[in-house]
Length: 97
Image 1 (tube, rainbow, N blue to C red):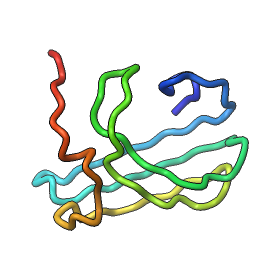
Image 2: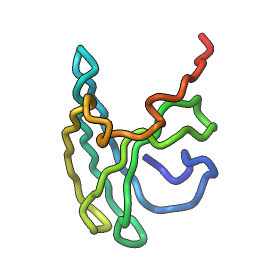
Image 3: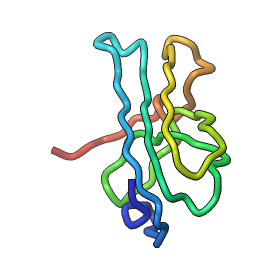
Image 4: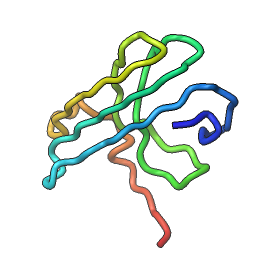
């Protein structure tokens, strides 16, 4: 994760990496994120799904990360529970091949 990769790009000094893993049956998800050098503590976090680079997408999963400017965290989601995700998962998207 880099500010330059955001839509709209910014000059944040922060960097990070995240992984979203889905179970083979798409019933469960695990998100693991590490980040450093935010200019202020995190107040909210979420994962978007699904758009091409440079385009915005709807929020698919909300999560509450620790209120720090550097760190890591992991969350597990049961996607069979509607309270786990937002409409971003349900929105149809066409992805060119």
